[in-house]
Length: 272
Image (cartoon, rainbow, N blue to C red; front, side, top):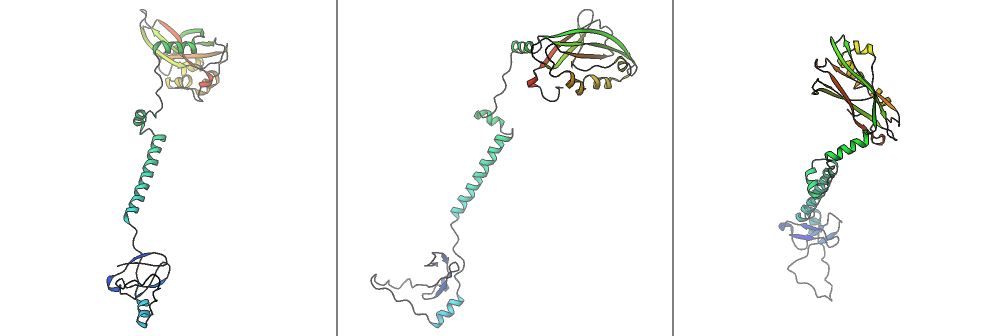
């Protein structure tokens, strides 16, 4: 049987064997004591108030012995809706985080038009024009080739050294050169790109190992940062490229500037 407290309107489920008319019940929420009405008794006229029941000794005993238990449970539908709303919020929040901070949903971003536009692919003519803008006025000076016998590799080194002069009216950084060796017919035998800025002495060329020379010439960040960044107009940058045990039929060489950067686009470390 369902019983409602007349004071706080809390609803309880009362066992039928205890639902006897006239029994006193105590609400566990507001502590109000009330009498269980007789559902079969006729209601008194509206203008004549019903007389309150007179408690008896047995009623007092029942008041102490009968408990109407816990309030009736709320409807399950509202709880399910709350759980569904919470799950929906978590899913939306997690999806937003994945979309913003990771690349997991990049294909979906592209479909929805939310991804970062891919950089425009330059044509061959555009790349050539861009390269000319960066290196067109970088001139080679004092270029000379020579052979040096190296004790560590027990062979010869083909060395090409020189300078690059900045003919622009603005600085350049990280100037890159490329040296190539050819046979007598003009066929390319070997080529090597390298950042300018590093040199070694003749003695070092004779006694250092191949790895030591590479570290001194190609991987020497201190020399590159000191000599090959913010090269002013008219400034020069030295370079030295070494071929270890070059082809015996090498009879000609060439050197060209293949890259440079503007100072405002340069990062702290030189490019590899």
